[in-house]
Amino acid sequence: MSGRIPRQFIDDLLVRVDIVDIIDSHVPLKKTGSNYTARCPFHNEKSPSFNVNRNKQFYHCFGCSAGGNVISFLMDFNHLSFVEAIEELATVAGVEIPYENQTNFEPEAKNKLLDLQQLMAKVATFYVDQLKHHPQKKIAVDYLKGRGINGVIARDFMIGYAPDGWQILSPHFNTELLCEAGMLIFKNEQYYDRFRQRIMFPIRNKRGHVIGFGGRVLDDTQQPKYLNSPETPLFHKSNEVYGLYELLKKNPKPARILIVEGYMDVVTLAQFGIDYAVAALGTNLTTTQLQLLFRSVPEIILCFDGDRAGQEAAWKAMDAVFSVLNDNRQVRVLILPPTHDPDSLLREEGVEAFSQRIENAEMVSAYFFNHFTATLNLNSIEGRAKLAHQAKPYLLKLSDGFFKEMMLAKLQELSDFDVAPTLEKETAAAQMPRQNESQNVRYSLERRTLALLVQHPQLAEKLVANPIDWQLLDFSGIEIFKAIVQSICIERPATTAQLLEHYREKPEEKMLKALAFLPILVPEEGVEAEFTGALTRLLTQAKQTRLEKLQIQATTRDLTDQEKEILRDLSR
Image 1 (cartoon, one colour):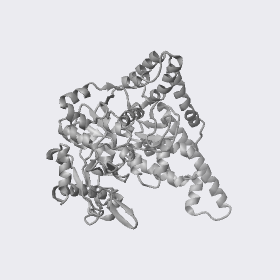
Image 2 (cartoon, helix red, strand yellow):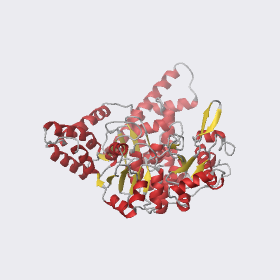
Image 3 (tube, helix red, strand yellow):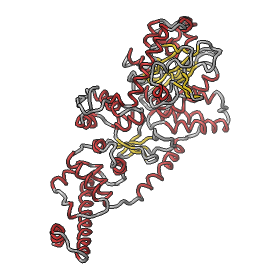
């Protein structure tokens, strides 16, 4: 990148992309009136308070007050910098960014996140070099050979080696940045390397940036066997998966993605030609991880080890799975035989047999109901009641559609009870308080008028045709009101999203976001008339206030010539 991004390009980009499509690819949305709703991805909630408006190209959460345009969403949801969010949108829109060269522009590389990215890339290269040249390299190389990892796969996944030593990295890199990137631990007034005597697996995000590491011990008697980078400004393990970058680099449009539990599973599978696997970084599978993967494929297969821990992890994953499923997405579940993981089973039975297991993986619907039928006595009323009670929370998470209806039908068949009316009542009851609450709120005339203009910037045409004489007016907050109105008239943004972008990181940004989703409750066809009426009333009141103030001032002091002229105009 050689310069800044032109403002006009950003405005054009916001017109090219649709916020509903972008957010829906991360968080499944449901059409509710003129808006789209979902449970907010930025805080925990049971009922949806997250709203997206296609006309305004703006989102807002009534629960936590998160809001903004599509750029803000990508920055917050994917933890991207502003430039990274623009680059991602440009990729979606299929356009190139025309960077400007400016001598007074401070390169983005000085941004702390970019500094950390550059550092992590260098550390990853350093670890690869240690695997090739360090005096202790033989133990690491022998371990990899023993696991059947060849040089090509080691290169593709940039596998490296962290030698045994407390301060291997510090002499070569900035200590402060190493600490912020999670590569050092500060203890007893000293910095120590977090990763020592381990095989190192760089964790790269979808864009190929090294954001963290996973380290595996060379001797299974050591604990912990796997060690991940901690949470850092770059790395949020619940938002990323291992191996996605490598997968998409080899095949940008895979038919499916296999989720496994370990780094070594991903690497081994890739070496044997099953190059569509990723790992969930040692955490419970999250909705964010699934949304990330569903942006690339329509089908995900969950592959879990056959031990008790693997089976428990598979069931825990259902919470996230049911939150993202819809009619266009498919999930299957593969539980391996006891004592096996993908690495060991693949080597024991061969690629063909393992691939057949993947083909025969159980549909999530069958897995879900089999989980209950295996443990509950459905011949009894009590067993069927438990089934309905335990299955209901998962079905509540599903987006409306054919899949949800069929799952409800299957539950009714097994439980002999129609749970659909119960679910509808619970959903309606959860949404009612917010709807009533928004209808009972009244807003000042100034706030309502400005909100109408912010939400419908095209109304600025009326103000351009009939300019406001600001010196005749007086009301609370007139200066900021005037500044925003004049900005809209000059910039002429096509949408609320464009307007908000002009005010990013400015003092007025917070207020504009609040105005952007102020519930006006006016049908689309009545917006222009409502704005004209509100503006007329506001101007009339503001002129009367100005007149009364000047009349009072005239009794206590001599008015200036300008004030006398204004008084005469207002008195006519």
